[in-house]
Amino acid sequence: MLQSDTINFDKKGIISKILTFSCVDGPGNRLVIFLQGCNFDCISCHNPHTINHCDHCADCVASCPTGALTVENNKVKWRQALCSGCDKCIDICPSKSTPKTSSYSVRQLLELLTQHRHFLNGITVSGGESTLQLAFLVELFKAVKANAALSHLSCYVDSNGSLSEQGWNKLLPYIDGTMIDLKAWQNATHLWLVGRGNHRVMQTINQLAAHNKLYEVRLLYIPGKTDLLSEIDALCEYLNTLPQQVIIRLNAFQHHGVIGEGLTWDKCSEQQMLMFSKKLVARLGREVLLPSVYT
Image 1 (cartoon, rainbow, N blue to C red):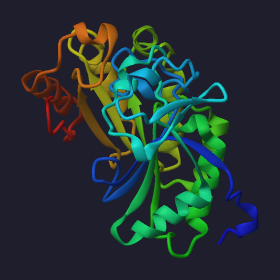
Image 2 (cartoon, rainbow, N blue to C red):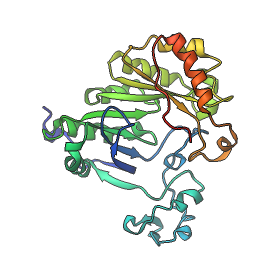
Image 3 (cartoon, rainbow, N blue to C red):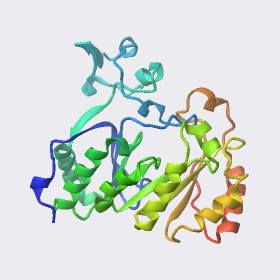
């Protein structure tokens, strides 16, 4: 049992959104925390407002129909109680950000988890890119593991896989599983799609698998754009090196939330996804998880 004096309960994270119930972000019923900020700039991103932190340009303030946004001391302030959730501020933001973030301490999140603990199997921290707030993640998961009322909750991280080996080593003692995106096979394709190469992502997948902390690898199929189908033999050869219990999940590119160039791309139809999955299954020798909706 970790001693409470080793945990910084006042450590704060910048949070975009909290879901108190989700059954699609890891095993069982989970509380999901979406942290603000990402070091990828994916053309296909369906949550682009989580990429950057608000720069307080105030372009969004006049667009708010309920007066939930004001400027105080040259900072945009969001009043959640007045917010109608129309997201006009997100639509107008020129910086792929949102003024609707909140700062939560580890102590505050423990209180929230305690309220919902009887209905939960675990907690998942997502983003944005959750590992950019590594120190906060470590303190949060340490606190969950040290709390007798919450110790039954599994701790999962949803990540783009960009964290360094040293960074993952800091998290490994406190996490039970991870979900990692592999967005492209060729480094050049990955660099074009997200703004960074995939070497670190591959290292992350290998490291987590070696420590039995890899729960799921997700593949995003974008017709005519990603190289997962054209590189399917090499892709499957690699996936077959992972433990059999690792879930392979397929995501179909859609336009929901996407901005810019991605809106001109073809969406992935159910027929295209079934074709891709059939080829994967034939080479992997096991089932893969398919999307439940195509919207």
